[in-house]
Image (cartoon, rainbow, N blue to C red; front, side, top):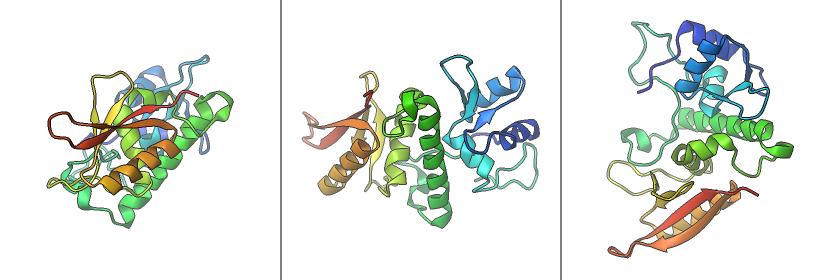
Length: 210
């Protein structure tokens, strides 16, 4: 599990602009937040830093993130991560998890609005292109698709050798088509393929550019 932010990092996150997630802090602290996946540096001048979906979720306090070194911190508490399928906790789809996912998705839409030309929220942003598996998994989980548990039965998002493409596996054909519709609605280009050896169907998904 990712280590929680330090007290100093929490102060930077809490001071972020409540709408845009823009951060103001010394470069060293911003770099540390980027390394933890809680912030990203805008590629265009003036190269401001903004919260990622995980950072928005931490700032909003949907689930309390403990201070580093806290003896009372539960071991299961940490930074939000989209479920790519196969995690032990994938079966936990209760209200708390749904709130976390909703918050992260809203943060991602805000990230699109702030960083895409013209504020376009209908297609993926630069952060998603550098975090393909996590971005696709967040889109799927936010729309109500079920990630696979340790025993299977749900979607699994995995890397592929192809640039800017992820594979989505789902043993149920109807659920696979639902995943395709979800990703297309979230601004991804999707095509269906068949494994040559097993014959099982899967999706290839890439962020749409225009």
